[in-house]
Image (tube, rainbow, N blue to C red; front, top):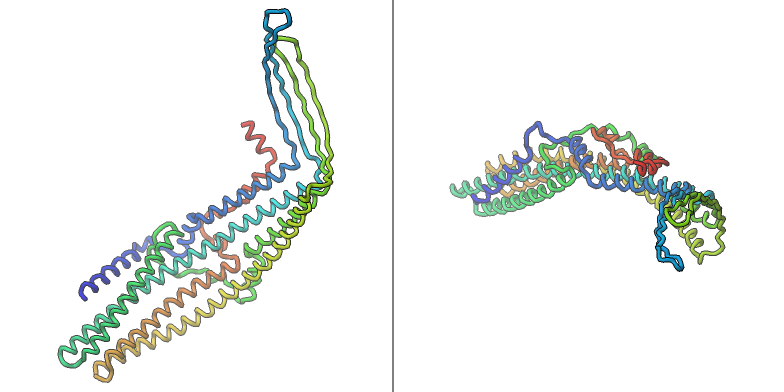
Length: 455
């Protein structure tokens, strides 16, 4: 028994040491969210995806812009005239500039550009959606560590209580005032308490590992206090209204609908004519042999009207129509899911408030009951089992209070996430907000590629 007590005490010392690493290094929820925002790989991946989507705009716009190229070629030949023994060496060079442009494609390129822009906008909203998911996961990990540490301390206190009751039962047995049943019952409760304590330690290790994965650093001295409750509206209907107008998942679904509509327009445009112009100008000069120097140029145009493409055009139109319908169905599903999330989070806050109130009353009553039962046991009117049961009920009530307080914080942030307001901007985090908007503006620079080549 002495070895087990020492083991528990040593483990508690390690937990308390990890939980109290300098008050100056305490981590508030805001600090954890700030660090996690800069650290999160999921956010960085979403940003890169948005930049990649922005390139689709440049690729689509290239369809209605000219392509200009320059060329230089050369040939060298040796010839031997009939009846002659002298080889003639002739070298010629040709230089030129070519120009190609589609001047009309039944507005297919315009539709593709619109689809690409809508896709880039959707990718930007995906950053915001990922941002909310990451920040909510950080809060959940933060509160998991905090509650697990509180549970570890509570269950250690419970183990200490059972140890004291076991020693008391043994002392009373020694003086003839107790029974072996009292000792056995105390030993059983101590074993149960010790197992619960070890389970809490294991859960804490997992929570701390999850926290470090999101934040990039081990949890220090955590504190659940925050002032983000000010972002919660006064009514459920107001919360739903904010979610339906500002949640990034809903805005993303709207952008997806626009992209699908533009995709349908592009597919239907394939039935129309296409007109293009081409031009070239060049010169040729030679060294040795017959002179072939000169300047030449050409210009032409082509009009193409599709008559039959093996069914590909019709299939593309039907597929685009299906994708457009699907995007609208996905949007309706997004609305339903967001509404459900808001109602669920709102109910979670109300439920947590009720649980906290009930748990506080239960803890207060449990302490009174425990003190009274201990006094009655000492007077001989209650048994050791009564004391052990009273302690177990008090511990259950205290654990309920820890869980309810944790649930209240998580439900508050879940509601902000469901409303679309769990963002670095809304929370006022001291970070550079990740966005691909500036990148989108840069890729639409018509002459950027030409300047890059020149440099």
